[in-house]
Image 1 (cartoon, rainbow, N blue to C red):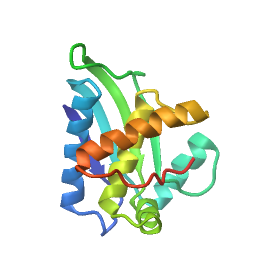
Image 2: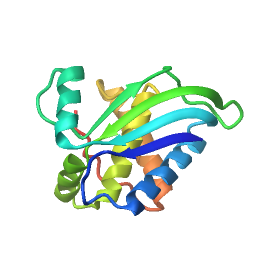
Image 3: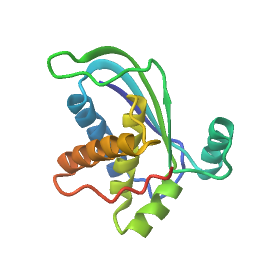
Image 4: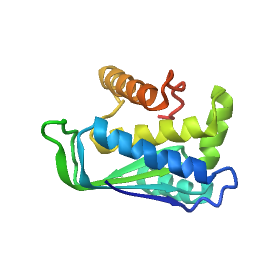
Length: 162
């Protein structure tokens, strides 16, 4: 598994435990989504200013958002029998400041929100979307199942904007 987790956010709420949990989550998602050990993923935690710049540049929308995904090789999920063996999945960019506000509003922990947003971002990298009702149902059902399995309890309430 080639996963890079970079905390460039300088957010004092982000702990070593959060980063370790995101690494564990990535390993879990790789196994569940049929991604082989040579598949590359980058997860970056950025401050509000950096996220706002990305949001404006790529979506033409003002203000910071919670999570953005930047696919590279347009990979799709594999299976245990036929995993995706190599390629660059892409980059998931998360804003901890926005995540913390959403977690507080939803009544769950920052750690849960970071896991929610990272899972959401990885699913986008694999081609899932939520623009149409049927797509939303498929993506959010899979997201809830994956998070519930990883956390060992009910998944946190979806807070993802968009």
